Length: 403
Image (cartoon, rainbow, N blue to C red; front, side):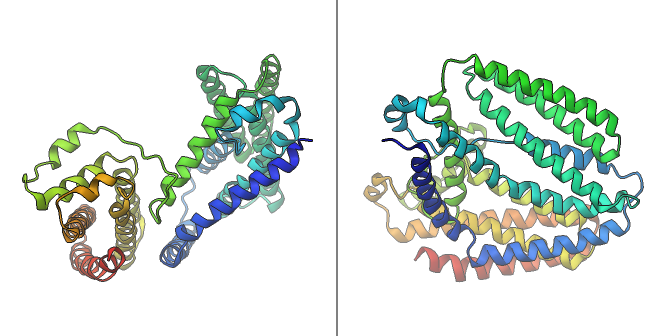
């Protein structure tokens, strides 16, 4: 006889085995060291910043906004796959324990974001409201867990609705109410927070009543949602290792391509063109490259000492180059590349050349950040240090990895 709970546990075990294999590559020695340095330095400067926190700092707006967004983002991980559309629909009336376990699993794996946010904003909360005790903040975190549970259930009920417009409206309404609730809780205006909570409960019960009017489970939607989330995970893992399950997203970006496709029409420039177009049109590389530059720029602007600014800039330069290494394996499943009348050494040369170009742009942008700050020593340090780091990392590490 079909046992939905046992089926979920088998599906969960397979899912855990697959994701843990890729997580080992993501959190390898290089990334673990970078993250440790990043967290340690950020915590140090965070404490320094809190010591001079202005009285007018909008703590309630920031903490309430982040808490509201975190509880609103409550996806349900069902672990369903495309074959389930054929084999499990017949057992829909016996799938209750499976979806109950899915909700519990979804709640547990999202707790780390809540706990992380609670730990990060705790010092800010007590620095802004020193007269309040720890029990008040713990009560706020308890309300955070309650709202997380409510939003997860509401998201699950709305997944029975086929119309995406209705689901978006419901999500927007709940998100605004979540933000308002936690904004008023942090400000200490409990009466208004209670009234807003009652409005949220009204929307919550409305979602329940709407879902009960639906005929059954929207299997296609559940499979699509879970497939998209796994593809997002695979795209992250693909930056560190080969992921055969990944379905690459391609974006046109014609105007950017037109700026960089000026490549001589010769055999030895074949991979120059291919890697440039892949970097721009793939759904991962260009966005990650720009995000790392912008986040690194924020640290350059707000970290107080020049030395630490340069260290953070080099750290983000390292992370950017490390991500770009996977370009070499991006087309590994395309057999046509083996037919190119181009030597393998030209392929390696093209990747090294592109990485030097990207690294040079990275260093120049960081130098411009220091120029805006008017710090000549920072400009000289990032130009010299970034150039030296690029030479050592690309010639020493990258060449060995692609060999």
